Length: 277
Ligand SMILES: [Zn+2]
Ligand SMILES: [Zn+2]
Image 1 (spheres, protein in one colour):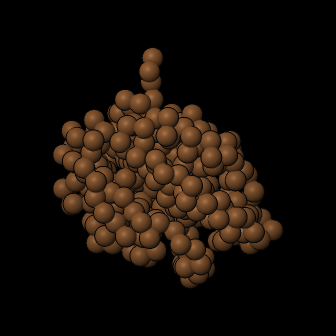
Image 2 (cartoon, protein in one colour; image 1 turned 90 degrees about the vertical axis):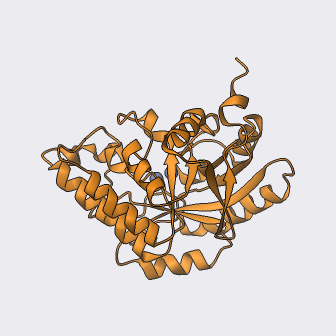
Protein backbone atom coordinates (compact mmCIF):
# COMPACT_ATOMS: atom_id res chain seq x y z
CA UNK A 1 0.00 0.00 0.00
CA UNK A 2 1.44 3.40 -0.87
CA UNK A 3 -0.33 4.45 2.31
CA UNK A 4 0.53 7.78 3.84
CA UNK A 5 0.41 10.11 0.91
CA UNK A 6 -3.28 9.95 -0.03
CA UNK A 7 -4.59 9.89 3.53
CA UNK A 8 -3.36 13.21 4.82
CA UNK A 9 -1.79 14.99 1.83
CA UNK A 10 -2.18 18.75 1.91
CA UNK A 11 -3.66 18.82 5.41
CA UNK A 12 -2.20 20.19 8.63
CA UNK A 13 -1.82 18.17 11.85
CA UNK A 14 -2.11 20.61 14.75
CA UNK A 15 -1.99 18.20 17.68
CA UNK A 16 1.22 16.22 18.15
CA UNK A 17 3.12 15.15 21.27
CA UNK A 18 6.75 14.11 21.65
CA UNK A 19 8.64 12.14 24.26
CA UNK A 20 9.19 15.41 26.14
CA UNK A 21 5.69 14.87 27.60
CA UNK A 22 6.82 11.75 29.46
CA UNK A 23 4.13 9.49 27.96
CA UNK A 24 4.85 9.78 24.23
CA UNK A 25 7.66 8.31 22.17
CA UNK A 26 9.69 9.77 19.33
CA UNK A 27 11.81 12.83 18.82
CA UNK A 28 10.53 16.05 17.34
CA UNK A 29 12.48 15.50 14.11
CA UNK A 30 10.95 12.03 13.67
CA UNK A 31 7.46 13.51 13.72
CA UNK A 32 8.42 16.05 11.09
CA UNK A 33 9.88 13.26 8.97
CA UNK A 34 6.62 11.33 9.23
CA UNK A 35 4.56 14.40 8.38
CA UNK A 36 6.71 15.02 5.32
CA UNK A 37 6.33 11.40 4.25
CA UNK A 38 2.54 11.69 4.50
CA UNK A 39 2.53 14.87 2.44
CA UNK A 40 1.18 17.10 5.21
CA UNK A 41 1.21 20.83 4.57
CA UNK A 42 1.96 21.69 8.19
CA UNK A 43 2.74 20.02 11.48
CA UNK A 44 2.14 21.80 14.77
CA UNK A 45 3.75 20.59 17.99
CA UNK A 46 1.61 20.73 21.11
CA UNK A 47 3.41 19.13 24.00
CA UNK A 48 1.65 19.43 27.35
CA UNK A 49 2.33 22.64 29.22
CA UNK A 50 4.03 22.21 32.63
CA UNK A 51 1.41 21.57 35.31
CA UNK A 52 1.33 25.21 36.44
CA UNK A 53 -1.98 24.63 38.22
CA UNK A 54 -0.57 22.06 40.68
CA UNK A 55 1.82 22.58 43.61
CA UNK A 56 5.33 21.83 42.40
CA UNK A 57 5.82 18.66 44.44
CA UNK A 58 2.77 16.85 43.08
CA UNK A 59 3.44 17.59 39.40
CA UNK A 60 3.63 14.39 37.35
CA UNK A 61 6.49 14.18 34.85
CA UNK A 62 4.70 11.32 33.06
CA UNK A 63 1.85 13.69 32.11
CA UNK A 64 3.60 16.90 31.08
CA UNK A 65 7.03 18.42 30.64
CA UNK A 66 8.62 20.04 33.67
CA UNK A 67 8.76 23.80 34.11
CA UNK A 68 12.46 23.84 33.26
CA UNK A 69 11.88 22.09 29.91
CA UNK A 70 9.57 24.62 28.31
CA UNK A 71 12.35 26.87 27.03
CA UNK A 72 14.18 23.92 25.46
CA UNK A 73 10.94 22.69 23.86
CA UNK A 74 10.26 26.06 22.29
CA UNK A 75 13.85 26.42 21.09
CA UNK A 76 13.83 22.93 19.59
CA UNK A 77 10.60 23.40 17.64
CA UNK A 78 11.64 26.84 16.38
CA UNK A 79 15.03 25.53 15.24
CA UNK A 80 13.42 22.59 13.49
CA UNK A 81 10.94 24.88 11.75
CA UNK A 82 13.70 27.19 10.56
CA UNK A 83 15.49 24.26 8.96
CA UNK A 84 12.50 22.90 7.00
CA UNK A 85 11.77 24.28 3.59
CA UNK A 86 9.25 21.73 2.35
CA UNK A 87 6.89 21.58 5.32
CA UNK A 88 5.76 24.24 7.76
CA UNK A 89 6.44 23.53 11.44
CA UNK A 90 4.31 25.44 13.93
CA UNK A 91 4.94 26.06 17.59
CA UNK A 92 1.87 25.20 19.58
CA UNK A 93 1.22 24.07 23.12
CA UNK A 94 -1.54 22.04 24.74
CA UNK A 95 -2.56 23.98 27.83
CA UNK A 96 -4.90 22.71 30.52
CA UNK A 97 -7.68 25.00 31.57
CA UNK A 98 -7.82 25.18 35.34
CA UNK A 99 -10.31 27.62 36.91
CA UNK A 100 -8.61 30.06 39.27
CA UNK A 101 -5.20 29.71 37.62
CA UNK A 102 -5.82 31.92 34.60
CA UNK A 103 -3.22 34.50 35.65
CA UNK A 104 -0.46 31.92 35.98
CA UNK A 105 -1.28 30.50 32.56
CA UNK A 106 -1.38 33.92 30.95
CA UNK A 107 2.08 34.68 32.32
CA UNK A 108 3.52 31.46 30.87
CA UNK A 109 1.90 31.94 27.47
CA UNK A 110 3.16 35.52 27.17
CA UNK A 111 6.73 34.36 27.61
CA UNK A 112 6.98 32.42 24.34
CA UNK A 113 6.21 33.04 20.64
CA UNK A 114 3.50 30.38 20.26
CA UNK A 115 1.68 30.15 16.95
CA UNK A 116 -1.40 28.80 18.73
CA UNK A 117 -2.59 27.45 22.06
CA UNK A 118 -4.82 24.37 22.34
CA UNK A 119 -7.12 24.61 25.33
CA UNK A 120 -7.93 21.33 27.07
CA UNK A 121 -10.11 20.18 29.92
CA UNK A 122 -8.43 17.06 31.34
CA UNK A 123 -9.55 17.51 34.97
CA UNK A 124 -12.93 17.75 36.64
CA UNK A 125 -12.50 18.95 40.23
CA UNK A 126 -9.00 17.52 40.32
CA UNK A 127 -9.99 14.16 38.78
CA UNK A 128 -8.00 13.29 35.66
CA UNK A 129 -11.06 11.81 33.98
CA UNK A 130 -9.30 10.96 30.70
CA UNK A 131 -6.43 9.13 32.39
CA UNK A 132 -6.90 5.31 32.31
CA UNK A 133 -5.20 5.15 35.72
CA UNK A 134 -8.20 6.99 37.23
CA UNK A 135 -10.97 5.25 35.28
CA UNK A 136 -12.47 3.92 38.54
CA UNK A 137 -13.68 7.48 39.10
CA UNK A 138 -16.57 6.77 36.69
CA UNK A 139 -18.06 4.18 39.03
CA UNK A 140 -21.42 5.33 40.31
CA UNK A 141 -21.22 8.66 38.49
CA UNK A 142 -24.31 10.26 36.92
CA UNK A 143 -22.97 10.52 33.37
CA UNK A 144 -25.50 13.15 32.28
CA UNK A 145 -24.43 15.37 35.17
CA UNK A 146 -20.78 14.68 34.39
CA UNK A 147 -21.26 15.85 30.79
CA UNK A 148 -22.89 19.01 32.15
CA UNK A 149 -19.93 19.76 34.41
CA UNK A 150 -17.40 18.96 31.68
CA UNK A 151 -19.01 21.20 29.06
CA UNK A 152 -19.43 24.00 31.58
CA UNK A 153 -15.65 23.89 32.06
CA UNK A 154 -15.21 24.09 28.28
CA UNK A 155 -17.48 27.16 28.27
CA UNK A 156 -15.46 28.79 31.05
CA UNK A 157 -12.28 27.94 29.19
CA UNK A 158 -13.62 29.75 26.11
CA UNK A 159 -14.68 32.74 28.20
CA UNK A 160 -11.16 33.03 29.67
CA UNK A 161 -9.91 34.26 26.30
CA UNK A 162 -6.55 32.55 26.80
CA UNK A 163 -6.77 29.90 24.10
CA UNK A 164 -7.09 29.71 20.31
CA UNK A 165 -8.52 26.22 19.79
CA UNK A 166 -10.71 23.88 21.86
CA UNK A 167 -8.84 20.55 21.85
CA UNK A 168 -10.82 17.29 21.66
CA UNK A 169 -14.06 19.16 22.47
CA UNK A 170 -16.02 16.18 23.86
CA UNK A 171 -13.15 14.33 25.56
CA UNK A 172 -15.57 13.28 28.31
CA UNK A 173 -16.80 10.48 26.00
CA UNK A 174 -13.30 8.92 25.76
CA UNK A 175 -14.05 5.70 27.66
CA UNK A 176 -17.45 5.23 26.08
CA UNK A 177 -19.61 6.57 28.93
CA UNK A 178 -22.55 8.18 27.16
CA UNK A 179 -25.35 10.29 28.58
CA UNK A 180 -29.00 9.20 28.36
CA UNK A 181 -30.52 12.64 27.88
CA UNK A 182 -30.49 14.99 24.89
CA UNK A 183 -27.09 16.67 24.78
CA UNK A 184 -27.90 19.04 21.90
CA UNK A 185 -28.83 21.99 24.17
CA UNK A 186 -25.56 21.48 26.05
CA UNK A 187 -23.64 21.34 22.77
CA UNK A 188 -25.37 24.54 21.60
CA UNK A 189 -24.55 26.47 24.77
CA UNK A 190 -20.95 25.32 24.50
CA UNK A 191 -20.56 26.16 20.81
CA UNK A 192 -22.12 29.59 21.39
CA UNK A 193 -19.46 30.32 24.00
CA UNK A 194 -16.73 29.10 21.63
CA UNK A 195 -18.07 31.30 18.83
CA UNK A 196 -18.34 34.29 21.19
CA UNK A 197 -14.67 33.81 22.11
CA UNK A 198 -13.76 33.62 18.40
CA UNK A 199 -12.03 30.29 18.96
CA UNK A 200 -11.65 27.35 16.59
CA UNK A 201 -12.35 23.73 17.50
CA UNK A 202 -10.10 20.78 16.92
CA UNK A 203 -11.39 17.75 15.03
CA UNK A 204 -9.26 15.07 16.66
CA UNK A 205 -8.93 11.49 15.41
CA UNK A 206 -7.62 10.02 18.68
CA UNK A 207 -11.19 9.20 19.72
CA UNK A 208 -11.22 6.52 17.02
CA UNK A 209 -8.40 4.75 18.89
CA UNK A 210 -10.23 4.88 22.25
CA UNK A 211 -13.31 3.03 23.57
CA UNK A 212 -15.47 5.95 22.35
CA UNK A 213 -14.62 4.81 18.78
CA UNK A 214 -15.58 8.23 17.47
CA UNK A 215 -13.75 11.34 16.32
CA UNK A 216 -13.80 14.24 18.80
CA UNK A 217 -16.21 16.03 18.59
CA UNK A 218 -19.37 14.04 17.77
CA UNK A 219 -20.88 14.81 14.34
CA UNK A 220 -23.82 16.62 16.01
CA UNK A 221 -21.42 18.92 17.87
CA UNK A 222 -19.46 19.59 14.67
CA UNK A 223 -22.65 20.41 12.77
CA UNK A 224 -23.48 23.05 15.39
CA UNK A 225 -19.95 24.46 15.07
CA UNK A 226 -20.49 24.83 11.33
CA UNK A 227 -23.87 26.49 11.92
CA UNK A 228 -22.21 29.07 14.21
CA UNK A 229 -19.27 29.68 11.84
CA UNK A 230 -16.67 28.15 14.16
CA UNK A 231 -13.51 27.22 12.19
CA UNK A 232 -11.76 23.88 12.60
CA UNK A 233 -8.24 22.52 12.79
CA UNK A 234 -7.29 18.85 12.41
CA UNK A 235 -5.34 16.93 15.00
CA UNK A 236 -4.16 13.35 15.38
CA UNK A 237 -3.09 13.74 19.03
CA UNK A 238 -0.18 11.51 17.99
CA UNK A 239 1.92 10.18 20.84
CA UNK A 240 4.24 8.30 18.44
CA UNK A 241 5.49 9.34 14.99
CA UNK A 242 3.42 6.68 13.20
CA UNK A 243 0.17 8.34 14.28
CA UNK A 244 0.87 11.71 12.62
CA UNK A 245 -2.00 12.49 10.25
CA UNK A 246 -3.73 9.26 11.26
CA UNK A 247 -7.30 8.83 9.92
CA UNK A 248 -7.26 12.27 8.32
CA UNK A 249 -9.09 10.91 5.31
CA UNK A 250 -12.03 10.14 7.62
CA UNK A 251 -11.88 13.65 9.08
CA UNK A 252 -11.75 15.33 5.70
CA UNK A 253 -14.80 13.32 4.62
CA UNK A 254 -16.65 14.19 7.85
CA UNK A 255 -15.85 17.90 7.44
CA UNK A 256 -17.12 17.93 3.88
CA UNK A 257 -20.29 16.11 4.92
CA UNK A 258 -20.96 18.74 7.58
CA UNK A 259 -20.32 21.55 5.08
CA UNK A 260 -16.78 22.72 5.86
CA UNK A 261 -14.62 23.68 2.88
CA UNK A 262 -11.71 25.22 4.80
CA UNK A 263 -9.52 24.57 7.80
CA UNK A 264 -7.79 27.11 10.01
CA UNK A 265 -4.06 27.79 10.27
CA UNK A 266 -2.35 29.87 12.93
CA UNK A 267 0.79 31.96 12.93
CA UNK A 268 1.77 34.11 15.89
CA UNK A 269 -1.74 33.44 17.29
CA UNK A 270 -3.42 34.95 14.23
CA UNK A 271 -5.82 32.76 12.30
CA UNK A 272 -6.23 32.31 8.55
CA UNK A 273 -8.24 29.83 6.48
CA UNK A 274 -6.96 27.34 3.92
CA UNK A 275 -9.24 25.41 1.49
CA UNK A 276 -9.51 21.68 2.11
CA UNK A 277 -7.43 19.87 -0.52
ZN1 LIG B 1 -5.39 16.41 25.59
ZN1 LIG C 1 -2.87 15.88 23.38
